[in-house]
Structure formats: C-alpha cells, structure tokens
Length: 585
Image (cartoon, rainbow, N blue to C red; front, side):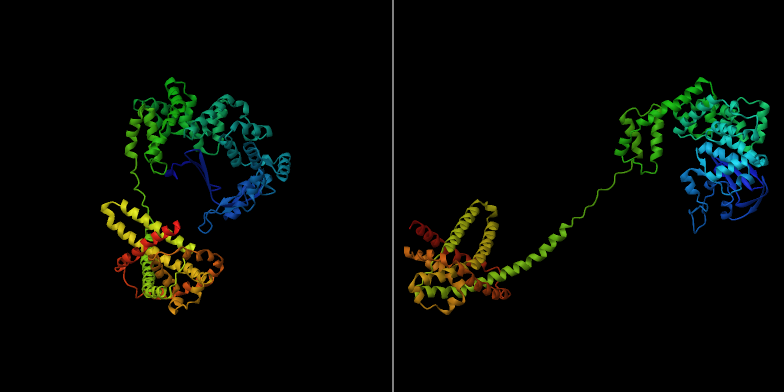
C-alpha cells in the first residue's frame, strides 16, 4: 500500500481495521469481515464471519452493499437489504431495529448523514431515534465511537454545517463540550473552499480536512485544542494537521527559487508538489511574489490553453487517437506560457516532429472489369449465331433466286409493289446515300477501316430486311389475284409456294430492270383492304426460320462476304431510277 502512495493513519486491533489515506483525498478503511454482538449497550463483541453476515450487521441499509470480487461473480452487486432502493428514495433506514440502543454512535452518525446528504430518516427509524434519545442511551457511547465521530466532522465537505447540526441536537456536549460552532472562523472557511475549487479546476486535488480542522478550531484555547487532537481516532490525520505550516513554508521556498523562475518550471512545480501544502500556502501566504505566482497559475496561464492550435494539429494528423496526444498538447501549452511559438511558422516547425506520416492512398478495386470480360466471352457466341443466320439467308437467296426469275419470265407475273415495299426501297436508298456520304467524309488514313465497317453494316441490314420483306410481299402476292384476272388464272409453281420470301426478294431486281407501265402500280391501292390477311401468311416465314438456325454449323466463313457486294449493289441503282420514274408518273 505504501508503495502506491498510501499513508497509514492508524489501526484498530479490536476490530482489525487499518486506516489508509491515498493522494487525492482518498481515505480507505480496510476491515476484516465480521459479525457483532452487543451483550451490553456500547460493548461490541466481534466475531469473524462471511461477507453476507457482515452486510447484515451494518448501521444503515445504504451502507449494506458490496461488490463481489470472486472469479465466478466478479462485479456483482450484493444488496441483501435493498439499500439501492433507499438510495433512490433518499432515506436512512436502520438495519437492526435495536441499532440505536446497541450502538448509540449511530444516532450521531444519522444526524451527520442527514446534514451532509440532506436526506431524512424513514418513519420507523425516526421513531426509534426519538425513543433512544429520550431514554438517554447516548450515555452508553463507546470510546471508539466518540473518537471516530469527532474526527469525521473535519472530514466532511462542509464541516461547519455538520458541526452546527450536531450542536443543535445536543450531541457536541457528549463528543467534546469545548468545541462549538462559535470557535470556528466562518469567513476564512468560505475563502478556503473557494481556493480549493479553483485548484480543482487546474487539476490539483487537495484534501481540505486538515486545513478545515485548523479553521474550525481557530478560536479554541490551546489547552482545549491539544486535548481535541488527542481525542481523534487517526494519529496520521493529527500529524498532517500539525505539519501544515511547515509544508507550506517549504513549498514557498522552492517556488521562489531561481531554477523555477520560468513560467513552465513554476507550473510543473505546482502540479507535482503536495496538494495540501499548495492549498495552505495559497491561503495563508502574504508574500507578494508568492501571491503573484498563484495569480499567474490560477488566472493568467489558463488563458494560454485557448491558444493551442488544435486546428493545425488536426491538419498535421496529430489527433486525440495518438498515444502521446495529451503530452504534445501539454508541451505546446508550456511553450506558450514561456513566450515561444508566437507565429504560425514557429508552431508548425515545432509540431512537425510529432506529425505522423500520411496514410497510403486507398486502393480501389473496380468490379466493372469482371463484367467486361464476361461480355467479351459472350460476344463470340452471338457472332456465331449471326454468321449462321446470314449463311442460311445467303443459301436461300442462291436456291430461290433462279426459280423466282424463271417464274416471272415464263408466267409474265409482275409482282406489284405495295406501299410497304416502296417505303422499304426508299429507306434502303436513303441509307445507301448516307453511307456513301459518310465514306466520302472519312479521311484517307481510315478508309480501309470504314469500308470494312460499312460492308458489315450493309450485310446486317440486308439480313434484317430479308426477314421483313417476305411478309409484305406475300401480302401483295395475295392482293394481286384479286386485282388482276390474268395473274389469278395462272398456276403457281411449287417453289414459289414453298419459299415465297426468297422468290419475292430475288424477283425485285428483275422487275426493276424493265420499265413498268402505269397500270402496274394500280394493285397497290387494292392491297389496302387485305390488311387483316397479313397475319395469316406472316406466320409461314417465321416457321421457315427454324431450318436457318440448324444450318448455322455448315455456314461459310466470313471471308466470302465481300463477293456478294457487287450482286446487291447492281440491282439497287435501277430500282432508284424506277422509283423516281414512278413518282413522276
């Protein structure tokens, strides 16, 4: 305990108690757990017992609680008498119904708690208190109880208030008749507590007990004062009381030394010296130099804490998360009170060694790359399907082309062009003109790439239009027999019925090569009422697409594609001229 800074103030062999005092006004009573029996009032007999029995022999329920230190129940609150509820209700309740009779010191303690906490006794405890007081059980007060309660007056936060409360109840006549509230210096007690609060704000925690006892007995006679000191329970507390003046003189001597002339040295001395000596010197000293140092410590130097550049420290990555953040801020404060670090440049230069390195840049993983690779894997599959469909369409054109041409020549069938076919031809011509214009605008360095792209585009469009034109031309094929008797009487070959889409597509350039007369366009008007019949024949070409997908495997490669270009472009030009002639007519 002494290695941790504790001072042994006293001990009690009978109850096996040890009284300790730690720096920072921490007083600890180390007592063995025991049970107490009272054969006579004020005559305790101690028996060593468990913690449960020890809690049940306490004075009030608010003091009958403990925290378990056992490994299996560490931190568990032990409250057999429901003291937590009494704390919440702010009442004092006796543990034993005979507490005031067996131990009369509890009556003095009840008044002291009531003055300190402003709590009240519950109804039964109050009735028992009045009964014990009226019966005069205070005369059985033990010597240990008297000494303990007498010293506790000085340990109270407001000793004068407790002294007056005990005096009002008549208990000071029992404790120490020569000590009354009139013997205290009330004005100085107020000033002492104010100074203690100012020191607390600066981080100094003095124990005011000894200084308070000095002022509570300031007007007492020396003979009575000496008797009072002998009547106290803890000899260590009396020794500290007697050492106040000597400790204050030693601190004054060190404070005014040359090595502590710098503000930072003085500040460190204030924070490291005995708090009780600092309190008593600040309260009693009349030396102007000492008063000036106290004024600087309490009033002037704290203002420099507002000048600590927290924003700059944040910019330099000196944040509270750093282990030495508090130490760095304290060193900056000491530099400021010494008159250093007056400019931002000096401040930055001072903080630079404490600045941690910048974190590495954040690594971002782009997931879109995986999607692109998936798209690349899927692209060849689509290309194979397109190649198969285009190859099947090309084979169909080669198979059906000659058959359609022979039918038109032998049977003299002029396939009429409806509005949909004319519109498709116009769109095809406009698209070819746009593509030719785009090819002219392409620079010489990119002509090859543009030409290959245009060829692929045309082939894709031709494949798409081949799927659309059969439905429109089948519509006109059905509308033509209604408008012309000659075409209705002529027998239609099997090849045309089997593959109408390919025959119509192949017959278009053959008709466009010869100039047609005006009556050839008349059946286009008659095609209007046959719109409902478009749905029935349109289903046949869709069924014809099925073998095209199956023929995708033996489809020719992409190399022979450019050979089909001259065959498609040759009939396109006459159709353009024919469209213009038909418009003029």
